[in-house]
Length: 380
Image (cartoon, rainbow, N blue to C red; front, side):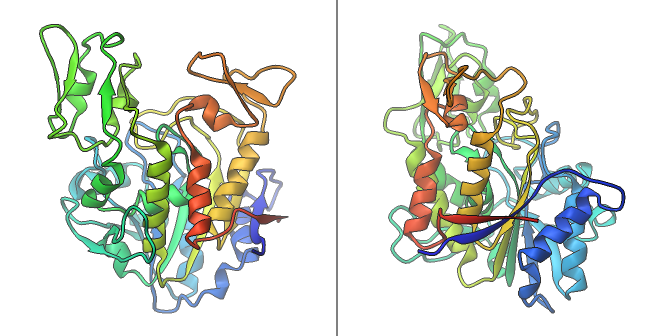
């Protein structure tokens, strides 16, 4: 398989060449103008950021892409699908308000926002994927399914279930309707480690499905007839009490995300941009963001989302660790953040989330024909 081209620009600027111009130059060099946008409904898929989180992509970068696409005749709109977990983006009313609050409004970005799966997350199209092992007909938000062209703009960062969040997760998880997100998470039901549970009730208060109760013994109990495996309790628990059960794997989730990505892109011209900035350890879905794990590294673009994710991961893994994230001195290994004393050679994401396996998703995405992990990096 031939190498895919991934274009990269660093963040160094000078008078007359700011970051927005560097972004425009990079995506033009990468060939975005080769797509026929004239009169085409063009979805820019991005994450609007849960209010309180400040690591998401700045609207200024989005406006740069919108202006270029509009100049090429595109009918451009910004989009994302509703969340499964309880928050300020789990319905279209709150989701739109959150997007506007975070700067994604027609004045700032010169494009409208459309929530992909409707008011309550029930509007979707089931798109068959040939040869799918896990999800034969992913449930994709109807607006994205109806779009003629898909452009992804991804904030590259760590992720508590997938290992990292890049183009594939932005597309595969982010474009899934509520029912689709249920399917993606259905094998990820957590369990409670009673020894660690202190009965703080943070999991009970934030479970969107009423599946968790804390009893008189101050121990959380999960009702598996209600649990959908969204992972909210795992992400919020500060005491390692809510954890993934033994039969749940990051590998399966990442493979499902790959199948959903294939459904999103099926039959559509597509192009992908990633921002390796504010590389927070966890997803932008939370109403906070921890300090970055590496310095801001740059921007990348490609027609191949698999190669793009691989290039971003390689860049982060080669970067110096900052802000207190421990690194084993004198080696290329990172000490495991869970305190188990193990190391993961050259692998920062497993340092942060040791139970994740991001490589499985890229390998499976390559197997099912989305793209290739082999790439040629071209600096602009």
